[in-house]
Length: 142
Image (cartoon, rainbow, N blue to C red; front, side, top):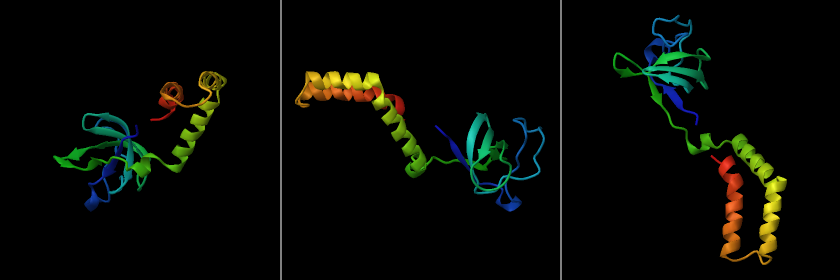
């Protein structure tokens, strides 16, 4: 899953320093990453974080330090449930589920279960139907 961070340092300097590479001696980029910016983790190596900017201003991508002189300047920020399940994400999941449930092999297996249990009731029917549904859901749902 997507790991996000928030820039909490650099308020007095207009943001934090961004470098081109992982090394703290690699080329420093001209712009700073703004305080309050939200960034997505691309790679994490020790105290160095490669990111992609989601909000705020500054370089689109680059490497930043997690802390400077023992002071945290970038803080891990878990996503809220609303951010995790966007409308687009929910639609995509729904489409994948419909595709899985629409496959001929799924429909055939469902028809077989219904043929064995015409009343569509009872614990055996519910168990078999649930197991079949999970063959699609367990692949699609996070």
